Amino acid sequence: MILRILFALLLFIHGLIHSMGFAKAFGYAFVNQPVYISTSAGYAWLISGLLFLAASWLFMAKKKSWWIVAVIAVTSSQMLIASIWQDARFGTIANAIILFVSVLAGGSACFEAIFRHDVRKNLKNNFPPTSDLLTEKDMHHLPEPVKRYLRYVGVVNKPKIKNFRVVFEGEMRDKGKDFFPFVAEQYNFLANPARLFFMKGKMFGIEVPGYHKYANAKARMDIRLFGLFPVIRKSGPVMDQTETVTLFNDMCLLAPASLIDTRIEWQPINDSMTKAIFTNENISISAILYFNTEGQLVNFTSNDRTAIAYMKEFPFSTPVTEYKNINGYNLISKGDAVWHYPDGKFVYGKFTLKEIQYNRDYID
Image 1: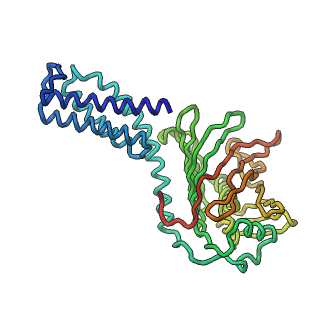
Image 2 (image 1 turned 135 degrees about the horizontal axis):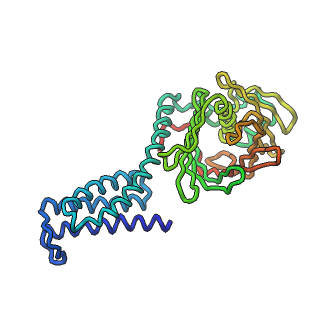
């Protein structure tokens, strides 16, 4: 936060200093430099200064467009500095710092724009939000624990789900390393299954955004430092199966109404457990769902997910630690992501649900 304030002050002060060029052009007495600045150049100095002030405000307001205004301001400023280099050359230092930070922010913004383009494309191709209601008749083929779960969540006599958007906050880590904080925005589409997950992590104070894309039964993981420099890129059959498990996990925990999907084969086990086999195109995965007496889904386990760090399958689970009523639904609000390695259980992710909306037809 301190660095954020200091950078905003740099933008603000640098903008104010540009007013000196405007003042000199119009002969204000408090500017005594011998350099000559024409009136037209004076207006250019004023405009450049205002751009820096605007960039400072947009930056503190967390507007995504701030870096574009800053780059325009730096470009115009540097051209003006070059015209009176001897007197204004030290302004290049401030411009270099501002340009460096702006390019890094722009890299992240452009990377995120890829995610938002894919969301818009899926929203355009997705079926319109349904007006059909989910009824008890739609649930007749489900095992009893799943029926109780759907009733507990409160999906009966509410619209069937075509897509959903979620926002998470949480922490993640690799084995042997500390947790790092993240925020994530995700869109899932159910008619033609797709999962678009964009995460912004902070490691050592540095932003490392990542985009997990699953569509047409194909998955890709792309993690980049500042959205510019590749850190991890993974795709292929192993990722396809792994992300199919993740997609089904989302359906179970975040969109329980989707469990009436005919692509799910149910194999009852007992009154608190059931096995599910989910098939998307040519990929089939299985999971065991665990329920308590209240009707809550309390855990999801699968042996079909690969730990990318090891490129090997290990048992995977997502125990639920808290439920909350959100927009009229009783949904998971907190949960963990766990690998069960031979040497013991390893919690690699902690998730807190901040927002969820069903049947979206627009992107924020």
